[in-house]
Each structure stands twice: as structure tokens, then as C-alpha cells.
Length: 409
Image (cartoon, rainbow, N blue to C red; front, side, top):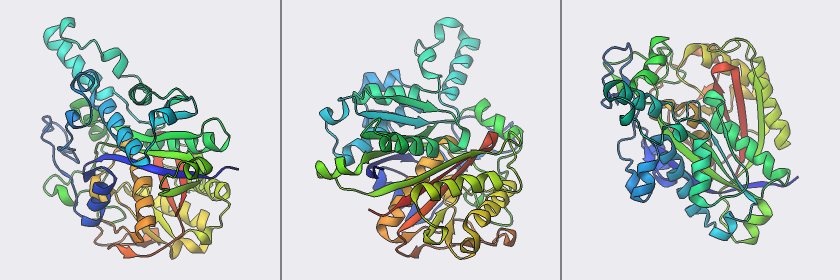
């Protein structure tokens, strides 16, 4: 069984663009959530989000390319380019058919489709962008990354809700193990901040309504949490067969050691209350990594800041980790950047790898009073520690569950 190294990380997030800036944003421990100013959110009960205001496509793409891509594909390509640059993959490395792309997204280019529909209603069909058809399909992120970087192996998009990014990383890891590819660009991207797209979630009241204090709205595991905060972002990892990375002298940032997935088969928006299916994903990931529960030294939890989901996740951790669940350090980093849906799992995998390599476990922004029903060792502040292995969990609408086990290099 081939080991899978991580040799590059690219990120476009509300707390920083680039792997170093993302980690600096984690250590700064300041929420990026604020009132939405990208569109009029006044009709909705929730009017806050974590926007990325410092992303300029021209900084990452040539002008023509930037114009032809919607925001979802722009941030997908930008994150992929950063990851490739850090990994030092050459054109020859990428174009030999032994490199693939896996990009997950819950919504893909839906927000761009909404924008174009508004243009159609106001000004007719001539106002609609000719790129609409190629922007809205779920595989557009993976396809545009492959085109941009000349990658001729498989290019696969998935739409497994908020577990999409983690699913993409896990599936890419298994493809490398199986010898289908030697290198994979894997992660997630999401650009959902458009009126109707955002409003669809606001109207079913899964979003926080702490409009008067946006910075404290995303509060994982806190007893006063009232819903998640939507955000946007992308993160892409370069995964590589260990021997390939060593052969070309790449810096190995960490290892993707295990992956597990399951489905609740229960409800489209509510998690299975017992946490059994989510626990199965974690148990599968541990077995895939050939690790025991006691060897996990840190958990980056999905921790979306919703009561139903966090209580179910806590039960899943107790079922999968046993007594270790009460003592292993846990943090929920969405307090910093909200919930970027399908991109969240990839962003959190990147953060977890950084935590392992820097010997510093993130705190949980906005955690004031822990919901004791969770019975977890949730970190309020960053903690110096040197665990050898960590768990990152992702759960989404439709009962989609994913778990990744990550190890130090």
C-alpha cells in the first residue's frame, strides 16, 4: 500500500490567501464574519457572512482567463496554482497522464447562474454570459484546474454537500494508493454568496441570526450557538505517492493516511441523532490508516455551530474513539471563517496539517461556555502540542459523512 504525501497547499479563505496566510489567520484567532455588503441581505433573517474581500483574480490569472471564469472556478484555479507552486511540480510532472484532479463543491457555479438569470430577466437573452453553460456544472472547478495546469489524468468533481472537499481528498488518496495516478490535486471550492443562493439557507433557518454582533455569530460548541455562518473559499492539496515525492526531492508537509465515508440515510438536513453513521466513517478512516483510536492526538471537528449537528458529531466521536473522546484535544475552527460548505473539509485538512507541522493546535474562536452535553475536550485557546496523527471530520446535508486521518511527515 503506497503512502500518500502532501507536498503543496493552496488556499483562498476569509482569513488569508495562501497556506502561510491561512495559518497566520488561525493563530490570530479573529473572526472574519461581518455584515454582508455584496448584495442586499435585508429580506433575510440572517444578514452576515464571511466574505473574501482581498481576492483579486488578476493577481492569480491572466486577464483573459479571469474574465472567462466565474468566481467558483477562479478560486479553484488560484488555490490549485498556489499548491502546485509550493510543491514545485513541473509541467512535465503534470502532463504525463499520471496526475489527476479531484475538486468537491456543494453548489459549484450556482451563484453565477443566479447572477446571469437576473441579467436575463432585466435585459434579455443578449445580456447573458456565453460562459454560463460551462460555469454552472459541478465539474467546472476540476475541469478548469486541469485545463489551466495541463493535467491529463482524471478530473473529477463531486457535489457531496459539506463533505465534498474531504471526500475529494480521500478519493484522490485512494486513487494514488491504487496506482491510478501518482499525483493528485485535491480539495474543495465554494462561492455561494449571492442573494437567492444565500437566502435559500437563511429561509430554512439554519444560519445564525446574530446580526447585531457578526464577529461572535459562528461559535462552535458554545451553548448559545444559533446556526452556522455561510462563507466562501477554496483549498487544494497536492497529494503524491511518497516515493515520487522523495524521488524529486519535494518537501513533504504531511501525510493523508486514512479516509472513511458513510451516509446517514436519515434526513436531508438533520443528522442521524445517534451519530452511528458518522462514527462508522471515523472508524473506517482509522482502520484505513491502520491506527487505533488512542493514537489520535487531535481532532479538527466539523463543528458547524449548530446544535443538532454538534451533538450528533460528539456522539459519533464517543462511539468511534471510546474513552479517548473525553481527553483528546478538539477544536472547531469555523468560528474564524464560517462554513464554506463543500470547501470546508479541504480548508480544515490544510489547517490540521499546519497544526501538526507547527506543533500548535488551534483554539475555538468564540467559545465562551461549552455545551457540556458534548462531553469533549474542546480547546478555547491554541495549545502547543506535537501529536503524530489527527482526525478531521466533515458532515453535510443529505447525511454525507467523511473523515480524514492525517499524520506528520
